[in-house]
Image (cartoon, rainbow, N blue to C red):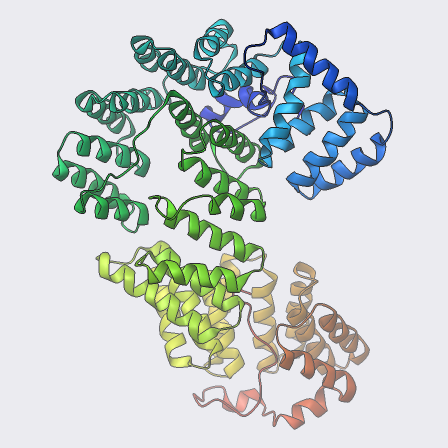
Length: 623
């Protein structure tokens, strides 16, 4: 558990930037508020009375245990609620106070986080992190000079990357524009490059109507980065629009497309330039500038590791509370909540983005992905189809739609979606990158499941042409040949190559065991399938295959045991479940006789599929 009152310097992060900003993690989850016009002493006394009235002597243990359980489930809202309840029973337990603060903010309940933070301030704990949060609250309340004083007094005890940006916007809010520019110029380097400071110098210059200065600052950031990432390209295009140069605005956006040719936001920006509409809404206040600073750093430190994702989320939640009109904060909040598996909260965050926003498509696509993780596949499909109907054509949308349809077992629809994604790439790119082999692989799976083998095989071959030796493709392709009892020697070679590339995959070892079973090597099948079971003991299909192999070598009691296990682990299809039940009732010999089983060696070189039914399906994830 993160102790927000103590220093967070102990957190270990891999990137230098995260290491630099880690001491501020406690601060970003201590968002407090104060009353207008009251002295610090009066505000402190008022908070003391409030907490004395709410503190209760009972209920601590139950609330604390419930909070820890919610924490283990990563249920931010429940954890925040129960930690706050425990805090009211034991208001001086700094561990519980810190957890209540952390989860309240991560769940987006800023009002509750403010209340908790007041208690930390009341106890006068010497914490530079708390000072940072207090400064952010001063900015929110419009007390810019006080915010600047607090930040400057702390010096390097507050991470310089964010400190100087906030000092700059506080100075501007207090009317000292030159001090603001000096603070941005002093902003510490990232990897030796003054990226953040130059960008915020440009933002302020653009607010002041000084387009040439803004463009010079954005160009400096571009040179430091060595390219035009989307956010920088958008703000630079807005500066060119402000300078009346539509052609250069278009040129910057086209340069950004070179590294991300299907970026829907950049494409939308180009459409706005063509229609003489602003690429971005004008930034209007120091509060919005400070929110942009928080989001800049949030995006820089964001990642899938829990510590960095929470740090990024905390900054973004602060930014949203500071300036709800700054639309990019909602995108970052949604992304980080998704990284932290808070899909319901992520969907809600994305939904706050209005359709008029340039980020609308990204927000709605993010919401579709969140809905899919909540198993609302109809909602995810409807949201993605709506985007495509509105003109979005990113291959990622087709890939996602294909994935959603596949999970719904709509195999014809999923194949068409993947194939449209492939067609879209061919329209724009001279050659499809090798990294996109999965489009062909997924399309092949859906065609194979919809009994269109010729199309499926063409897709598998195309995937291997892009990514030779890809083990999941080799396994699925080879297993499909085994199930159709075609070209079994070739299938066996494919599966052996897949095992060589991925030796610890139980699914692939299962495929080798099954091709041995199909070719009559039952002892070899038992050996390989036993290895597969050891790797993946809870997979229905592997247990089913192992049972079949055990039966053929006379170990019938063990075979029935594994068929029962196969039923316990839920077969992929109703047909597979029914077949296992019949084997338990009649035995494998009778079931094979019913199916017209023919010894496989007699037809090994035949291309015509036999009448025997396959015993199962290969998992789409390479199983």
